[in-house]
Image (cartoon, rainbow, N blue to C red):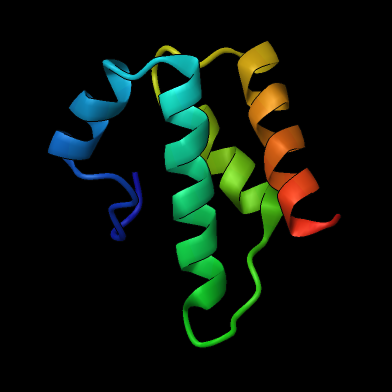
Length: 75
């Protein structure tokens, strides 16, 4: 992985225990935090790439998560 850690070990363990609803809520809070960070925009493809690195989240679930994120961002 690169020098910048996206998700620390404790967060990763918490994510593994989350239900689908909890994971979606977490990701929305994460995305909102990125948007509020100095008004910078986020690169949805980078978010997707980072999500794909989380063990246990398959392609279909990633697509569902990205759809929810895009919906809430108005993309």
